[in-house]
Amino acid sequence: MSVQRLPYMVVFEEDTGFKDVYGGAVGMVAVEAMRITPDTKSDTAIVFSHPIGGGSFLPMVNALAHIGHHVIYANTRYRGNDSALLMEKCVHDLGAVIAHAKEKFGYKKIVLGGWSGGGSLSLFYQDQATGTRLKHTAAGDPYDLSKAELPAADAVLLLAAHVSRAVTLTEWMDPSISDEAAPFQRDAELNIYDPDNPNRPPYDAAYVTRYRAEQLARNRRITAWVKETLADLRASGRENHEQAFCVHGTMADLRWTDPTQDPSDRTPYSCYLGEPAVANDGPVGLARFTTLRSWLSQWSYDDSPADGLTNAARVTVPALVVNNTADLACTPSHAQRLYAALSSSDKSHIDIQGADHYYIERRDLLDGAVRQVSDWLKTRNFM
Image 1 (cartoon, rainbow, N blue to C red):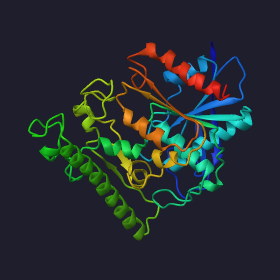
Image 2: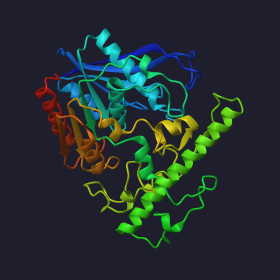
Image 3: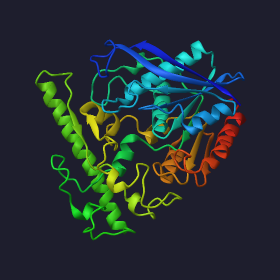
Image 4: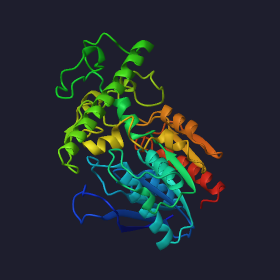
């Protein structure tokens, strides 16, 4: 089935105290969207989004349109750059696109398409759309989502999704770094890439427990420093000032070096960024370059409001969780945790055996996965 692509922009105003993205006027936001539609009509749109966007050509996104669904991909204002990203503002951006889709294109029903990092964004959005809305960011800056137009969705798809950016980062952090000012002085016993580390895979339970605790402790140390630095700026009268910083060592999950951890069909000793030991300090790791406010909003384990499990507990619409069993980014436990957390009375879990994160290595599995997602939607009259 052939499809048409319509790129467009949604522009809206917001009440904000300062400017946090490049270009444009303070208080004016422009977000990009792509509408992908077949020739058939539909009263339902599947709206995908991701904190840093860029997924309008993803295999699943396109395939759903080619099989007959109307799809919209919404980029947030942080398209391609999450260094200053605030999850609270991503919710506002997604809401603006959904409201536009209903008013401009006439869609009556909205299905949230949560691919990868879009999964926790979708759950955070639905939680805000239906529940008590935040009036401040995680850093305490005024940002009243109760004033935003956030139409609630009618269903949620969690496709190859992880539980949250903050939890994922924490599970991937290198706990051998104890001093952020000296990130390359590392504790050999906690450095899984150090040949002198006496702890070798398969790791025993005591080592896994210690390792996970040290990862969480590192995340919390950074959070404490961020809050202290923000407090110092505010105390000195620099209320809106920011500070950028680097976070090294963010691809050191035990899963990458020990296939018995969260076992799946994934390729052993690899991660979605390639060789884990290289990606650990590579230029494109999670949270590699961030800011004080952004850290609290998207990376702080204890402070990020976009916590997929907490948000999912307040989501009651029909939900589908799809796990790709050879995924190098989102391992099975993430799908299992999301499924268990959802409060939906109508929820389903599907495993796509052998599928990788993007269906790049196994393109032959895409059609079957899309059919299962489409059948789930059709059964619930989302077509």
